[in-house]
Length: 100
Image 1: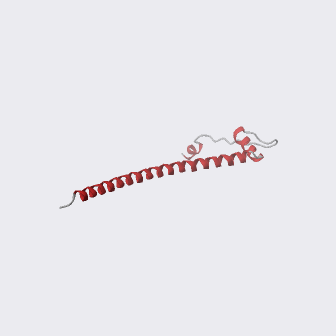
Image 2: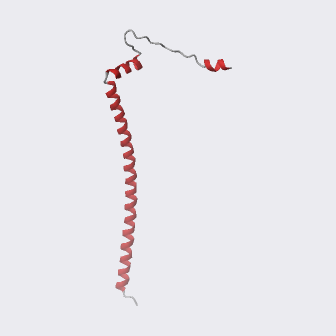
Image 3: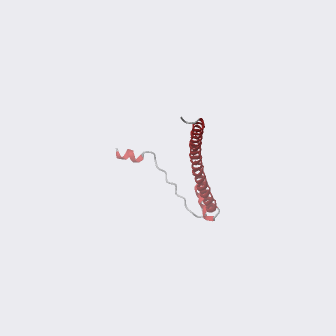
């Protein structure tokens, strides 16, 4: 017959293995969750870095005289002295009416 000490030792060993396996699974899940969070944050960081880089390039461009001229033409409809500005107006659906 088995001794009580061996049964107690086997029970403690099984309990220890069960606790270690459970804690291992919990830690693996936690690591996976944290990895997913880090990946999401990294994607946000990369997107924001690209936006900042684009804005810095625009700032550098608009700081030049060419950039100022471009902004003056686009946003304020200004032109250089002696420059002719042609405004082309297109009538709405004029092409579709001629085809019919």
